[in-house]
Amino acid sequence: MSERSTAAVSSADDPNDAEGTTRDERAPGTPAAAEAGTTAAGTDTKTADDTPADTTPPDETPTDETATDEAPAEDAPKAVPAPPELHSGHKLAGRYRLEECLTKLDGFSSWRAVDEKLRRAVGIHVLPAGHDRATPVLAAARSSALLGDPRFVQVLDAIAEDELSYVVHEWLPDAVELSTLLAGGQPLEAHEAYQLVQQVSQAMTAAHREGLAHLCLSPSAVLRTSSGQYRIRGLAVQAALRGISAERPQRTDTEAVGALLYASLTARWPYEEDAYGLQGLPKGSKGSSLPAPDQVRAGVHRGLSELAMRALVNDGATPTRLEPPCTTPEELSAAVAKLPRIRPPEPAYTAPEAFRAAPYRPAHPGAPAPTVATPTLPGRTGKALKWSVSALLIAALALGSWQLADTLMNRGSQSDDNAGDQQRSSVRHPPAPAGGKPVTISAVRDFDPLGNGEETPSSVPKAYDGNAATFWNSQWYTNSRFGNLKSGIGLILDLGKARQVGGVKVTLVGDTAVAAMAAPRATTAMPGDLSGFAQFDTGKGNDLTLKPKKPVITRYVLVWLTELPMGTDGQFRGKISEISVTS
Image (tube, rainbow, N blue to C red):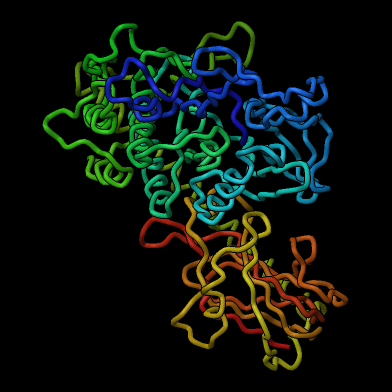
């Protein structure tokens, strides 16, 4: 998803900073400016006594044409390529239709677009092919796509054409930026802030293990989905688009996570500048000790407040209680894991509506209301007697209702059994698939058309090696519905040629929802999306036999997982230990 806000750009070198610290080291989430060129175009060449040097031969008179031809190319300032002239409705690669321009900055533009092939919204960053950041951006996008971690907004495509280079990424229509959640001035509840720092620190730990840094981690780069999961967008790509680098990328990203936690606990940005819709610290507080979140706002969770200070080790922030600072995402993630679990708040109790007896209506107009003589007992004895009588009446009514329902159900089941016996002789069930001979599987490939195209291809052979102890496994997800990222994943079985399929037996690890699909008989090339298959059976369990109502003839069979089981580690994965096909 493209960023809607333009981050402030500051000078890379601060003349007031004695140590020459760059801005991205001092304030994570605030990108540093790209290095500015210092050449001076059109400066006259001077001799030692400051008189202009005459470089024209005596027998030649300079003209405008010769002067232009002889002007050195390096004297001209390096021009930033102009953004391409794009507009809503423009189509890239024959499938991506631009809808809305979100950002224009430093020669690139960001768009909300529609992938007409897969009929889904996507985000696109577009640069001129000659832009000096085009190559680093494409390289960063491809590296980010290889990570394949569902906690990051996924890069779907990175394309270089003759005139344009562009990066296509996921668009999450139901997600909300952290900056939007905090825009009203109210901080997050302690459990939400805990979930934020836990998920973001774990995600950045995984990224840095693969050599990837964010360097632009800010409240506008963190999204909260409708399921409560936090997703990070712009991994490596945003820094490449803005030309940002850091000498200590792990430290920079760790401080950025600390700033996110600080903002979540206080609804304040822990720097002097107002940013991302949040009010900064009071002017002139730079260089003084940064107040802890529980000193800025009452009721802040003490453990989370200390954790934010351990991550925010810049601009005067110091860890409290002599705890060591967290300088890498891995250290921060380990510190989060040591915190006592913060439970979500209990739902607010709503008292039931008081019972109101219906008013008495006499059978005949003018008839007096009946009087019931009820003995009254004083104090607690009278109240206890009333409750006891009420409980007995309720129990009697429940017992009578249960006996009546049981009698009616027994009569209904007997009549249903009789009717069923009469109909069994006339109803013909479809015959079981004939033959049942094993069909050779010539090849298998993993299938992820709604994600990166593939899941874990290295373990695919284990799904049909004849060894039930080995298995193909998918990537892990945050819930059984693939983290709400896609509707399913699977394996495509290539039978070598069109063959009759009477059944597909699938052995799985854990109860998994599975659909079996087949490509049309005339299909000669493996389909690239779900539209190339037709479903013929579904099931859920760990040992399934999926059969069509009548045998189908096909070369390609898709075993499609639609719901994943939870493993012992609390994560959700699909695991297929064996697949076999019978005729």
